Image (cartoon, rainbow, N blue to C red):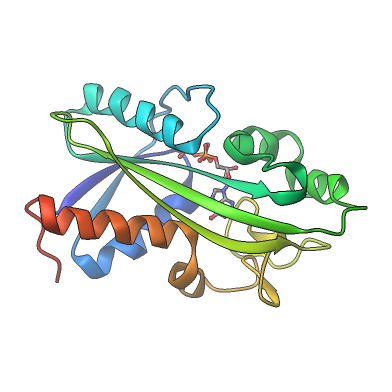
Length: 189
Ligand code: ITT
């Protein structure tokens, strides 16, 4: 099993996951299918449900990934509602919400659900701690990257290679790889 379907419409996620998978000899095949997103309070529930749904349709080993930005001073908002909030408010809207707020700590979380259709999905998560920047900075990445400050640079100011060394997605994906090596017929190169 050296080929994995990745069910997502987000091209930014695909670029990152492809580069994370390549060193392990795993090819990622994107399927831009929009699985129904459960209105749930956790990324885990959304990813798990999405993987079960997609596996019933595609009947091949696959992953779905649900991710989000959790802002401490906003009680973890937008969290599982990140895609909706990004679409409606954008990065400018988030900065506006944060304009008078001093505590700018934020966490990016990624939850990957793997399902081969024959058993329950297996869930892997990863996170990275940072802060909400005071303004939009950088043109790299996607989504909230230009407002997510990691050290003295935003994810919009670092290369994909650099982001892939430290990101929430990387942590979750490496956990998946370790599990696949132990439990599935995967040989990494
Ligand atoms: P799917 O088809 O995979 O569901 P999506 O874009 O709807 O794609 P999510 O439901 O997981 O993805 O929503 C996550 C939101 O958080 C979305 O707006 C992303 O752009 C944003 N996001 C997730 N990971 C990110 C990252 O690494 N950098 C910046 N923004 C990110």
